[in-house]
Length: 287
Length: 277
Image (tube, rainbow over all chains, first blue to last red; front, side, top):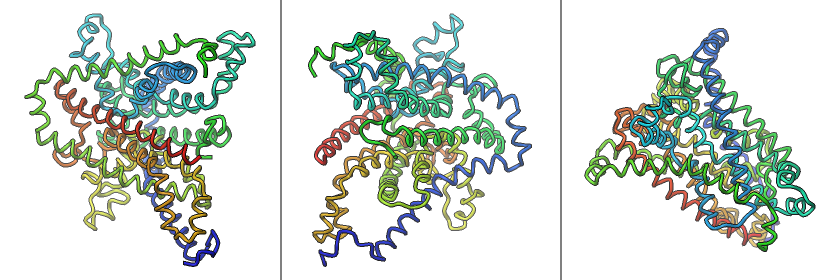
């Protein structure tokens, strides 16, 4: 115990430990994360590029891509507007039950996707609360596109709100109050002061929300009914091909979702790197 | 902080009203329908459902498996966070970005990819099988999928805290003669504990309800590798709505419990952060 050897001891033992830990973490992450990612693309191309392109051109694939885009185009903006409204109310005003509201906003993150789909079947399915009324009026929600959108909205509801609440809380309201005092109208204040201050966090939230919306499987699978060409999004198309033993086809469609995931990670890393300070005013995340 | 200053800003009524209505219609009303439907089941029905061996086995696998996976992720996540924050090495930023892959990769894609790796004829499975290790189509496969989906939670909750942890205290401890292990156990671990528990709880919540990545690799053998969410789907397919709702309510109840635990943990870790500052 020689206490006065200095605070840093870059002894060979320490260097060895450090090298071993780095190697262990790299090996662990390579097996856990990199290997599955590689498997997606290698299995997709296992029968050659021509067979891969052939799968992508099939009408089932094309319609699943279109449906996935449609669901995301409806669900993401809807949660974007909610996120802005919720963050404004929660960070600019004091009211009773605020903590409870925050907890409810986070709730969809901890609910099983299957439960998220189930609740809409119980509301709008043939046996549900509104089921008989809906079928009388010829409106289909379950086993149809509206159900897919609702389940996706449920699952992705917290993403934008969460990003904005933590940022706007940290930013405070001085600039907005100044704008109001100088005579700006509510909308002028919002578009000239608030929006420029939160734009990168907004984009960050939308990015994560969109990735989850396009990739959601469990909730969507419960309400979809798996009608080929009508209610199968890309993740469901992956499942159907896989269950029909069309492994290569399943991985070909999956590889598109894998590309989406990679693109999301790249844009996310760029946003964190370039606009880290504006994403979180307090603690920069990830660098 | 006065009331007058707050009142300067417009839009309180409309923003709160919109948020509450939206949340009510999308989340709360549907969840109420779930609990209402489950209440259609009488005591006998509940008993029958929950004492059925298949239900018990599925609940045990979902909860027990999620617990094991979250424990593993707590240890592995701590190690990964430590290496990413404290050490500088080539490729560090790449590995840092890759931590989020399980968040970004759709669960169905993860499910079939993990199966391709761990199936008996798979990339790794073919070498593990002769050693007597069967992962895919067995309970171990469920664990692998749960570890995969829960992995980012521990790292991403620990990372900002470890980054802001004051290293002067550690260096002071070491200059006073503490060994590295002593410094870690006495200084670092207590400061990280609330955050580590938060990450653990988040990973647990995710793994308990996980469906997409698990069902492909699990093989879904009743009584052996069948998870609770899959049982809900099967009950729905057999038009047993009350049974599905009852199982769903059990899972929802657990989610709410964890949510409360996470909120309390975050308050606790917030106190730690204040004390550290």
